[in-house]
Image (cartoon, rainbow over all chains, first blue to last red; front, side):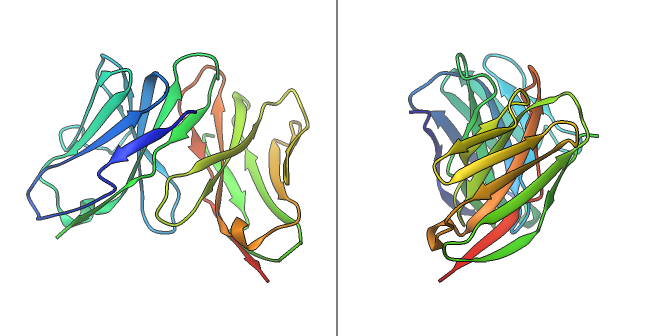
Length: 117
Length: 112
């Protein structure tokens, strides 16, 4: 149980285009989902917290107009990187917190490798 | 005060040996301390977690030791195997809080 999927697993796009990444909790409901980015050999950096049906809360320094987050249902959150540039190339990982029962546990997706040319 | 300091940055252990990774925190509001294992190109996977009401938790070859007064916790991997070679992250979050604060990671290599 507690499986989180991401799609796509990798994407290559041209500079200036937008890319959408999906995060799904497959076997549980997640009231809260998180989006992280990770550079090579570095730790995870929290970008934003999204709660189902409400606006995402962004961490300091993260541009909300560039990284659009939508959490339309208890099993799906999306991250759209708008007008992507090479510096946006990174590994994007989502996680989901179980809606009930397991307290603080977060389960992570497999990540999406974004390369912007 | 939100930081979690992790050491060492990298670690090489012989097969069958014990791998020890340490973390320290400042925020006394933290009350949930998970450890994650991450393989290259994959998302982190929850290994084991502890709350401050116990000083040790063991699951298979993995043990967390927790020292509340010193605000430190550590991961011990017994009988380390080459398949344990990965990056390990400690993390913490406060009671009722959602956000996880991650350590900087430890790259473990288990040699034959």
